[in-house]
Image (tube, rainbow, N blue to C red; front, side, top):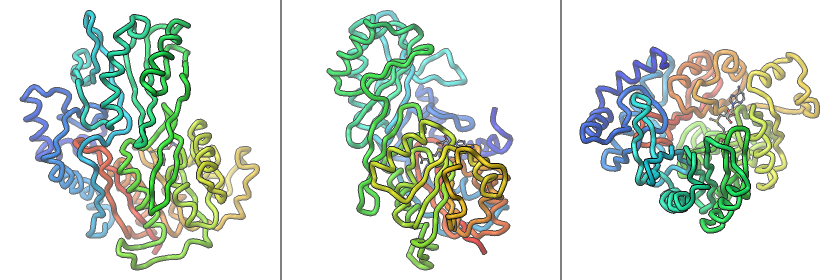
Length: 415
Ligand SMILES: C[S@@+](CC[C@H](N)C(=O)[O-])C[C@H]1O[C@@H](n2cnc3c(N)ncnc32)[C@H](O)[C@@H]1O
């Protein structure tokens, strides 16, 4: 189900070049191209030739969500993606047709008709290398092939890879033996998943290295948890977040010293942003709802030698309540909230945005760095925030080229 406003977005898009090219692709028999409201994982066509035009249209639509909300800076700080091989993760159905097996994506308009994916130019070089090699291995033996229905790839720019194989049957010792042999031949890690089963050969994470402002950061990224999908864009987002933490404008005017102040991050995932921002601040506090992501964030904090950060497993709503003097939370018992001088807050919520309650809480902060994968909910939350804050900087990060999705970021400063 899409909201009325999402349908409006789709209708706006329907008149654009993006949708004209999608329609043309569909008429050429290139199924799996989205023609209606945004849906993930259906965009199989790479169109480098129309990249710039499509991005310009997405930016215009993203900005239009703010039309009756608040003023945006005239400059959009635009961060473009690589045109191909930008996706560090990809999920494919595996279909079997007699002796032949192949990767496919399904179109929810026609879920029973798989769209075969022979190659996926948007996927990282490592995924593109692994796709045929894995299929060859899996189809060599019924032990690995039988009832396999999905393959999920997670890779890094450094060549690390973990592939999850999902089955409609229980995995036995034979499967484990053959999967282990395949793992050794391919030089990757493999996870076998079936109902109530998870077999990890040999690890269920990858380690990504990102250079930000000349410093290398290392991130443990867990299979099955949120990770930034586009590595090039992820690095640009970190540089932008560091820049807006201390500068009101892209040209360095209006710089502020935050080295004696503290940062709060909500929705911190594996610590992606906090770890890169922590060196700028005196102390940082970060929270996240997912237990496994908090564990990964703790590892990442240690791996990067960050010692001025505390990470707690709490929802954004619970943390807001605690800092507003609400009830006491056991998971905060070892944290002295009063010792923080929190002046900046960074939020990167899921597509649904923060909502009024958490937005109202954020309005207490001098500087709000809001990263969003959905400009509609970002604009909705800015309706609350703009009562007290001005948008000083507006950036877009093209995480998902050739789709209507656009990541954006705003810096809001208290009036
Ligand atoms: C878009 S991801 C961002 C993660 C992280 N900033 C990153 O760049 O990797 C959103 C994160 O919010 C977490 N989350 C979802 N709902 C939440 C809530 N109500 N409170 C706190 N975290 C939440 C998810 O587990 C996920 O890690």
